[in-house]
Image (cartoon, rainbow, N blue to C red; front, top):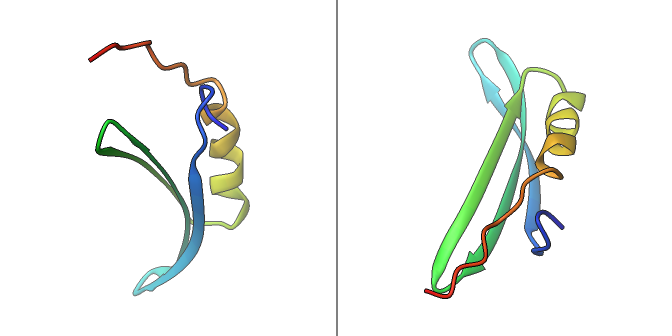
Length: 64
């Protein structure tokens, strides 16, 4: 949960010429739109550390 909304989460690792990169993706849908956050790091714990800051996100209540 982020900002009172449920998100789908996916973790991944990508092999590049400079080494492995680790990431997480968070996706939710609202009013027909997708909202996505991508987190990336050169080390495995990086996305998890950044994910903690996403817990502080707040969404405005919109009637549109």
